Image 1: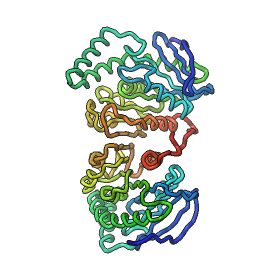
Image 2 (image 1 turned 180 degrees about the vertical axis):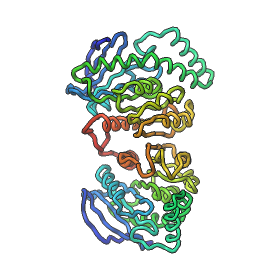
Image 3 (image 1 turned 90 degrees about the vertical axis):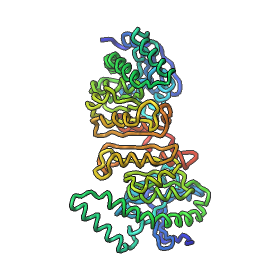
Image 4 (image 1 turned 90 degrees about the horizontal axis):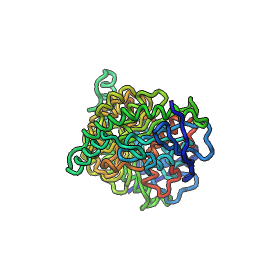
Length: 254
Length: 254
């Protein structure tokens, strides 16, 4: 088992940002400036083609840290960010780019490649969670959430299905593919986002993945618009979701 | 045209509550204690078998008044609250009660009766809105929203389709029936709630009514659970929806 090594530290937007590695996997941990002793932890999975510090990640982290007082950790997915690509990664990325350039459907390639990435990423996330919980400011028995859309859902659904320490999750914007079988094992509260007019993911596919979760508490948020038009207020909704499920006294009850 | 007559005034839960009549229709207007000069107005439609001061109405009003600083008005629907029932009302209510006691589906009766009530209620709401906008503290050119679930949706959808003064609406928990045709005329932002495991309204029916709205901005919130298990946090979501669409500077940006 690898311990967590901090490699850089800075402060901005009311958060402390610390780069880290767990073994060969690079990550970032955003925390409240006060230290937040034994505060809850939200793991965030980035989207395909992005990386741990993409503005979507730092923006959501800022809302979570300031809105809930939690820690937020992101690691680079295999073949993403600061990580090298394998020959397999290169082949699949080329196949996706070719399909997109030709205006052909990319769903089957994305589903296949994301499933492959999830096989590699789930053990990395579990090792990162072990190492994060060894930190004094997080601890081994605090609440843990997961927040990931697109590829972050492809990796997050099998992760949450396997990982009993994660007790609340926000997912969305993915095909059911092999994920539906994993979703049937998930019983923790789930918020799930889809786009009603998604040009890549058929409406029935989004509804089917939401339907598959075994959670007694689950909420679907479907917004009009295309794949990339998820409204910004859904990030605020995710913050409130984690405030309800991970934090005993949410600081923003409205 | 009837003007609005106030018949009683009291204060509680941080709101001023004023009973009123417009012609023969009784209503209630909840307002911020400060007076709220020219504040936005939210019209709320109550559910079937309920009335203007049902706890669901006063509870939602309290969240809207304190969260957004708006006025909230509810009128008794035909045959409800302080209003007399016609022979037609009595027949339909008996038919519904008989079906429920026998464990038979009530959808077709509810859809038929609610459509009849909407025919009577829409002109009453438009007259009430005229009279409310004559009040100095509301005014003729301020933003107006509508919030109604169940029967409040059956009445609200044709009302919003007909009434250009209403610029944002929260609906939910109803069959499409004849409403889908009216929904196709609605282009203002809509938030729509349905229950994923509704024992009365089939899932496909709820999805079809949401799909029918022509609004470019529309959001579906589908929660696990039965017809009467809509989570309380959906009322908070409606408050934020109206804060986004009716109030220029929402007081609770989180």
